[in-house]
Image 1 (tube, rainbow, N blue to C red):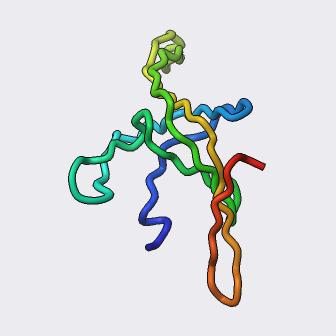
Image 2 (tube, rainbow, N blue to C red; image 1 turned 60 degrees about the vertical axis):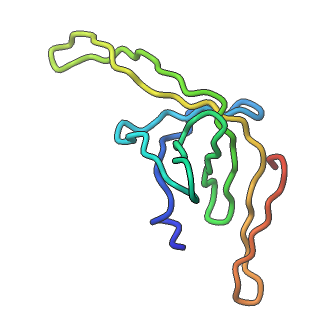
Length: 116
């Protein structure tokens, strides 16, 4: 499966603190759902769901979403007046990493618990 076609851009990592990560959800993200198998839809970004954070061409960090929060963020409009916009933030717990490597012309991936 083509990775670019199979992934959805959720947002930008804003903070990493120990085993926790905070992601600012993109304004273009619509909370779409995907059906990984038969049965119920899977809501991307819901508490308990997995997110994948690409950290290098060969390494991806896996995290489990623990919370989705709405923040009111002050911004200045064109007239210089302050107004508030809603901004979604995801908090997740880092659980491990997937490291890919080439071996005899094939790509092999290995999951490692914890973050190095």
